Length: 193
Image 1 (cartoon, rainbow, N blue to C red):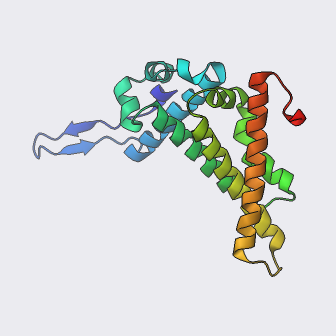
Image 2 (cartoon, rainbow, N blue to C red; image 1 turned 60 degrees about the horizontal axis):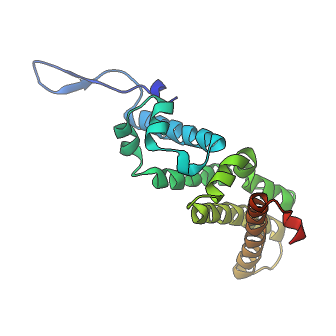
Image 3 (cartoon, one colour; image 1 turned 90 degrees about the vertical axis):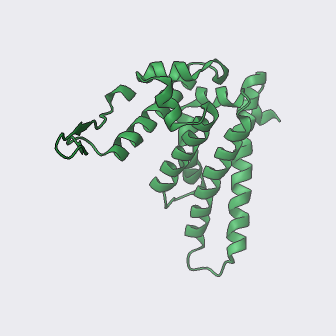
C-alpha cells in the first residue's frame, strides 16, 4: 500500500540552522514508490467497479494516504488514467523486444488488458474510451513494429513499409480488442460482425 512509503524528515542542526537529512530512502525513490502504489490501487479498484464509481478519496483511502498526497502525484483521476497507461506501455515495450510470431507480439502488447479485463471493460464503458484506444494502439504498434523489424532483418525493406505494416497490425488488433469489449456490452459475439 501507499502507506509503506518511507519519507525523509529533516532534522534541524541548531548550530548551523540547516536541515540535515536522516538516512532514509532517497526522496525520488519514495515518490516513485508512492506513484506506483497509487496506480496499482487504481487498477485494483477498476477490476472491482466501474470507473465512474471510483473517487480520489477511494484511492487515497485504499493507499492509506490523504487527498493532498494523491494530488501531489496526479492532477486528477484522468491524469492517473494516462499515467497508468503510460507506465504499462513502458513496461511492456521494455520487457519484450524479440518475438517468434505476430501472435506472441500481440499477446505481449495486450498482457495488461488480459490480466485486467474488468478494468478494461470499465474504462471502455466510461468517458475514458479514447484514452483506452490510444493506449491499445500505442502498445500494439510498438510491439508490432519490433516484430516487423525483427522479421525484416537482412531484407531490403524501406522504413515506411515497416511503419505501414506495423500500423496495419496495430489498427487491426486494436479494433479486435475494442470489438470484443463492445460485444461484451451488447451481449453479442464480436466474431459474428
